[in-house]
Length: 173
Ligand code: SF4
Ligand code: SF4
Image 1: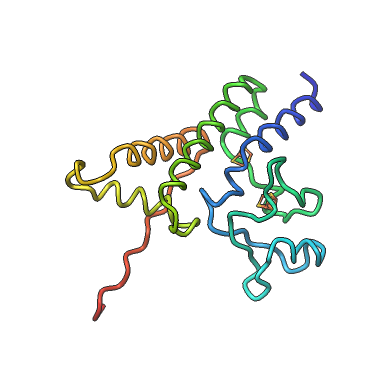
Image 2: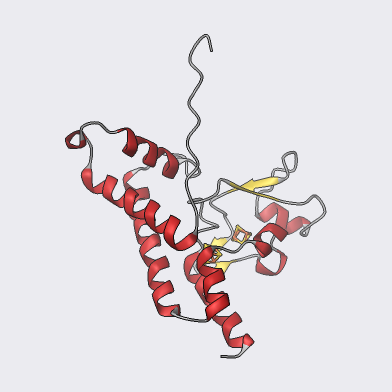
């Protein structure tokens, strides 16, 4: 396999996946003040005062990043465990593509059932709720199973773990 072939495969993997752009793993992307053209910053809805934009990224389309040539530096440099493994070994692309398809399928199913939850916090909150369940018969078992499978796959395949939701302060704290 040539370096060009491997690079093309990696592009295909990320175009198929997009999980690091769609708000499942991260809440926002930090940007440098001087990077990107003004029109790209507008398209990404960069909050200039905070130097960041929120995810899911509005420029993540069916074919991947729609501002690819002018994407932020953090987007250029980020790689996940799945990406790194293929870059290193060049093995089992089809299996990796199947893994990201399953992750996307789970995300779509869970999101459809949790309409109204903020995109950037729904997964950690769903996991917190799941872990806090005392009587499984009181909850929707299928949803909890999907959340558990998604969390496991994100951890195993992508190398990501959910951050715990911070407890709201009690009155008087
Ligand atoms: S999570 Fe990994 S494979 Fe998926 S788009 Fe991001 S870098 Fe690519
Ligand atoms: S700018 Fe492109 S690479 Fe960065 S989060 Fe948006 S879609 Fe993903």
